[in-house]
Image (cartoon, rainbow, N blue to C red; front, side, top):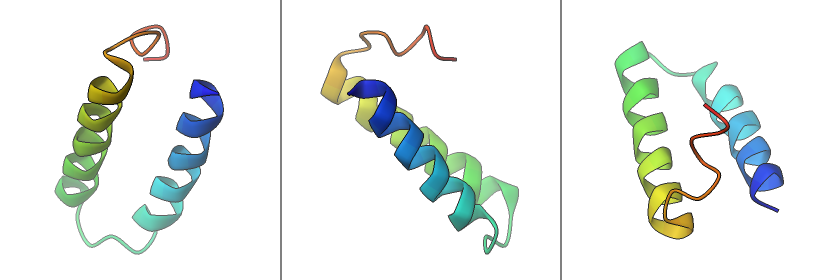
Length: 50
């Protein structure tokens, strides 16, 4: 379930980044997503993916 959620958000972030104006916006967006997943899953299995 965790992998499917991360995969879905990876696709949405990738499609969103196609219209992004700068890499800093994309990196800050990914950082916020990672922080949200760390709060939800308390870091479980998260570090094995990256």
